[in-house]
Length: 126
Image (tube, rainbow, N blue to C red; front, side):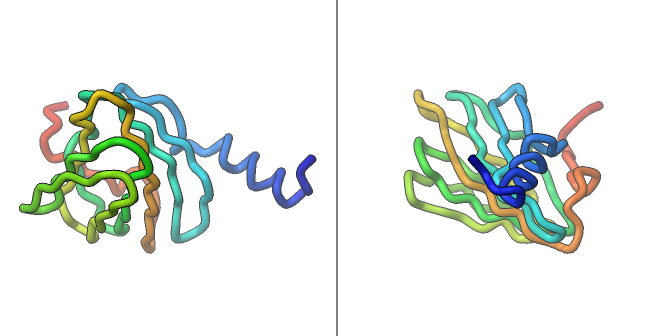
């Protein structure tokens, strides 16, 4: 059984508009506050999240399982289990799973504004 406080947190996570299936995998909100969000992200093998920029929040990614190919600004690097990277505010970034197993990472978002309308995808043609 959960306490009322824990149940309220679970209800928030399950009802978050930021969670759900994507073409590239799955996002699960672990915890959410006014100026932060912690997500569990699973990226399918040979899939990627398109390049994007956030102007009001930074992100920190920690690889739990698999291999991540990260582009952040002008830098490209491979990250493996228990390695991490920081994405500063207003920096073009993307992540892909070049491997054969799902890439699982924890994403910690932190900033003064957490709305999805702060996500710009400069290479989208739509």
